[in-house]
Length: 193
Image 1 (cartoon, rainbow, N blue to C red):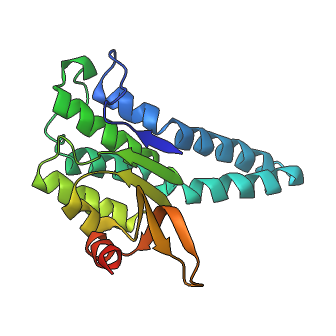
Image 2: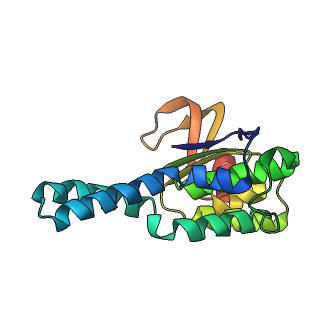
Image 3: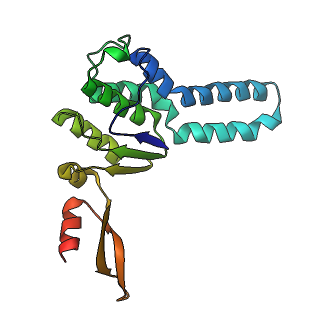
């Protein structure tokens, strides 16, 4: 599970490159584990076959083969590509820190990604990049946002937390949050109906 809050939590010390490396740490650990198991298998250790298969499946689920390319693409796509990877995180502006935190969340490629107001501090180009990444990503993304255009461009389902009376398909009345399929415009149509 990956989480990006409205206020990014980044280490004050270290560089952008250090932060990217930290985001890739789990994938790097899987690479090392697979190499160790490959070595064991090359020496005839049949007990390494099943653990290797598990490590490889996890690596593929996390899209490990393209991790470095994904990292470079996320940093550039969110408008930080002109910054040196050696630049210290504590010298970034608030907006740059928010963009870096979002890039790191995307780089980690978690199965479940929780985003709180992800379009804050983004310009139109960065929002377009984020929308494409979220539409194309494998896994579940949950976003809390007031950006209706963003919702229209990425959502496949909306959970309206406002308790209301609705009628279930079987005719029974229910009071509580409502779940709607489709984009934001679809939600508005369903709610009006």
